[in-house]
Length: 292
Image (cartoon, rainbow, N blue to C red; front, top):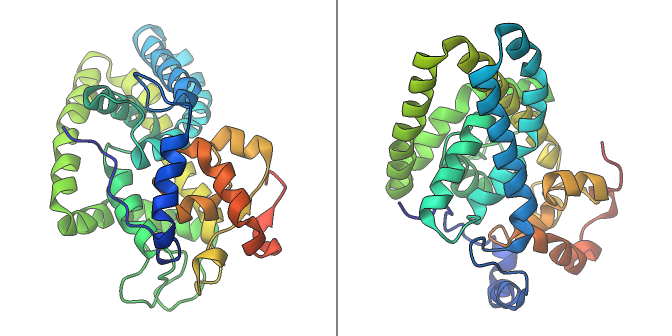
C-alpha cells in the first residue's frame, strides 16, 4: 500500500518558500537507510517498546494487574500520539510495509486508526484551520460553535469525539484514494482486535481499548491549545506556540506550531530551524516559554 503521507498543500503564505523547503530537506545530513531520518530512532524505539509492553501485559497480566495498568498505559500512549501525528505527515520508514506495520502498532496504542490523521488532519484541518464557524468550509478541528462563539475545552473535546469519524468520511469522499486506504487498513486493524478479543477478551479491553480511548481523548484535549482563541486573519497569528524545551522534546517540536503549519511536510526535527526563521514575524503574545 502506498505511503500514508498525504500531499498536504502548502498554505498560501509559504508557497513561494517551497523550493527552499526542498533544499532544506535535501541538505539535511541526518538521513538513514531504513529510517528516512535518524532522529526517529528514539521515537521508533519508544513506540515499539511500549507496544511490546502492551502485548506482554495483554498475554500475562492477571485481571487486577491489567486494571492497575490502565492509567500508566494511557499516559505512555499519550506520548505515542504526537509520534503518530508526525509519521502521518512524513512516513518514518523507507519501506511501505514497515510504515503500515508501524501504523498498526500506534493505532492500537492511541485509538487512532491508520490514515485517520491523513484525512482529518492533513487534508482537513491543515487546509481549513483558519476557517471557523460560521465559515461554509469550517475547520475539522473547529474550536467555535455553529454561531461563531468559542467553545470551552471540554465542549471542544466532546464535540470532536462525537464528530471526528463522520468528518474523516466526509473528507475522504473528496479524496477517494485516501478513503480507500483508510478503509483497507481497517481490515488488519479489526482482525488484530477481533483475534485479541477472542483469545483474551478482558485483557484486550483493559490493556488496549480503554487506554487507547483515554489517549484519543487526551489527544483531542491537547489540540485545543494549538489554535483556540487565535485570530483567523492570517497564518502567522493562527497558532499558539510553546517554545519550551521539555514540551518540545516530549511532543517532537509540536509547540513550534506556526512553523509546523507553515511547512507541514517537513520532518519534525527541522521545525526549530523554521521557527527561528519566522519567530520575529509572530506576535510575542503568541509564543509561550512555559510548559503549560
